[in-house]
Length: 457
Image 1: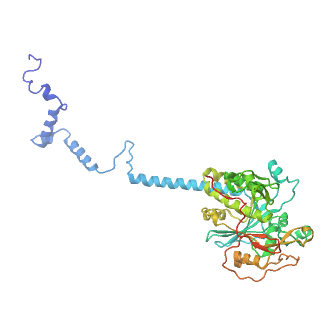
Image 2: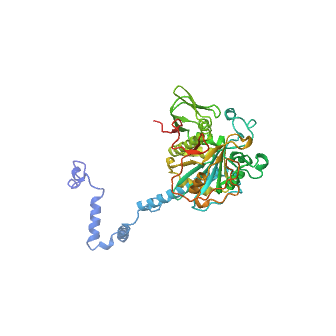
Image 3: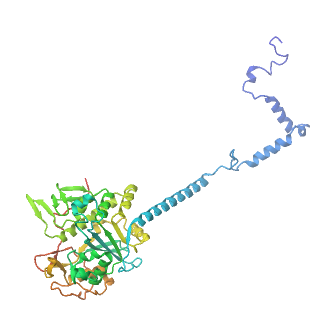
């Protein structure tokens, strides 16, 4: 016991042999041997419990692991399914919210009831009368300075009379412009104020419904929908898209519309500048050292309006973002009026159908007319040129045309019913411009001094 240990303990308690051994290792080994062999095998304390525990452990292998919370752990497949379901719910919520927001904005747009319009057939081509109103009501002081206030320029006239022929099946849009100085047969109650014959834009003074009736009575064109845009609506639409780009080959101005482009080239126009371009009837451009005048008047303006529309479509397609779309939708209801038959779902359907429309495919033409001055105090006006006008209408509206009840007068002031016309497959005609003689001749292309759509470099 010199080392302080009991005699005979040196072999089993050496530090080398004890290092790395579990506590009571020998006792555990003896328990194992006892359970496997020997007469005392059945007398091991709690042997049956130990064996039951081992069996239970073996039987639980392969089953889902149990979390401390007692809930089974999700497999990867289950997580994927739940994630997909959550995504579907989220998309549905966003879609539902978007639908509700668009409906809210649609409800804000002013509506007008048009008794004279015809219900459009589902999926079939239809016609929208687009009216550019020159009313000054509700205009800002800045606009009043440029175009005249409501107290100075009373009532309303149609600066723009366009018929948009929409064919959803081919995603085609064709525009027919009727010059504002075109003489047509007036209908009651306009006959009391304007006489038997007068300019077509005067009919709008009695409202959109009266203009629809006048167009159908004179030309046999059924109108399915109406969209009215005044000065503020025009400017708001352009500003909401961040402006439009037009390339001016020369400096340009119009003292009446407020147009003032001091330098040539591709440039960004805001709402008021774009409106000045679209309203310019006294267009001048600076070339060869002096200001030159565009004598085509309303025809030149129609051509520039077509250019504006293409630029506006380009801007709408190239600047699509949640903020831009929200700004555009939020501004459309100000200065825009639609007929109350133009339903929400129909508008959404058109937007989806034409969201990828190429503005270069926009087909624009002008009703053939000829210069006339035989209408008393009306001054220089235009009368419908036949049979060219009817040929254009038949090609554009086809079997939808009806027989006019009040055809427009000819240059002699006599009602001139349209001649029988067979539809042709000729491409839509170019805009017509008045010539120095009595007949109008097609213009092959817009003049080189007009602005054109462009993309900034």
